[in-house]
Image (cartoon, rainbow, N blue to C red; front, side, top):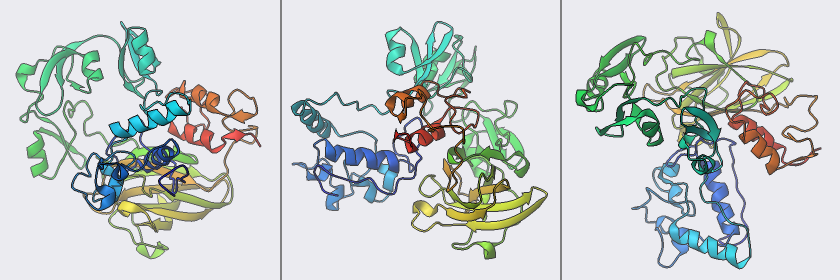
Length: 433
């Protein structure tokens, strides 16, 4: 609330990208908490420094792109997509001086440093933090990568590193460099990374291998470098259709509509209590079984990067009964959506999320809330070590089993340890009651 000492983080949505990404529309929670924490450890806004680090808070948005945590560059055109999730160099120096003068513990500036990922030592795969991997002489393939979906077996081939740049590397070096590996034995000579490379172009349910420019010209969706039709480049998303709806519990769930096929199921704007829908394009489906009678919150409010529509149905896929819908939620940026709907314990509901227009597709978090669905036999959700408190020790226990199917650490019981489990744990922070 002021430039110094005391501040409040407001309008938290409970979702953000993992691994942490710069220039992401869904970074409000990370940005505002880090921003207000900055005030509590000695720093002012970037526009209050002499000379100013940037002018965003003084009405000058000319350098808004690349604005840092203590800036007001999120208030310029582009919003949170302007923001890099780091403190400016002079801000870091100010914070470090403050911590030194108050004899505080070291401040960790790398937000991803404690998130594990694949560590390859020879062909042995384990999941460690980057620092721990380096300490044992391993090759770290990035935060939130898992041994289940990757391999440490060394292969050699062409690696696309952005633009048309191609290098012949082994798959591990390619992955750790953020490249796309084209396969064992592939070479740069065939031009697989260049503008004339032909990969999967998706047109509805059809797939053809075309260059990116040719695909765009005919209104298709280019699946990306390395994606082929035979390799599933245009396969539908796992929850693209009603009968393959993804089962959710209360929490925050990452999802995408990119490449989804637009459904033909009917909808009625008259049943929307607030803003009307668009065309519900590139839609995906979810299912939720109510654990109690009451209200269910369904929201993409500020947590996705596209203009969304949400519809909730009763019944089955063969006999859908629409009960609520929303195009634009009140106070939700980017024309994102939010609704509350009455539900009955034990009843299953179908949730459809799509885009307002044909161009409206993207990724983010779908939030379900308003229901008290914690297991009745758990004395305190998140108290992993059963000491009567939910603390950082429990948090580290959960993070240590990231992307695993560990019943003890899978707090929302969705079959995998992920960000929704972290959010449940944090919601019970402190003394168990």
